[in-house]
Length: 124
Image (cartoon, rainbow, N blue to C red):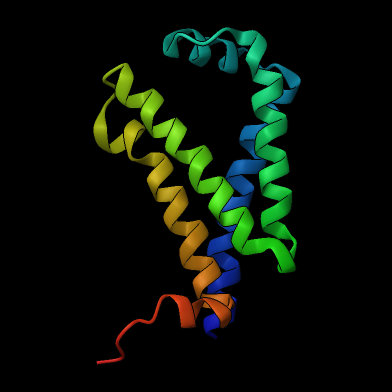
């Protein structure tokens, strides 16, 4: 049961990140708008979308999933910093990448026993 919940949490994060990277790759108008609000040139969208897909692929490979989670954490940290820079709303914009990061790490922790040795949680 624990592993299933882990896969579901990971799947939610993966679906969001996949959607986010694809709209960057296809150049959706919402990407141009958000890049403008953040002060980034829209020409960076393709490179950022590719970077996100590479990190996501590394996360999806079971042997490299911990490395992928670390890379995605860095990626999402950049998203938090970008939102903070423009003083975006805290709970909806600034913390949204943190929520995705919690799904990534929570899902990985529930499905990967090797993390339990690195991050031991008390049972009582």
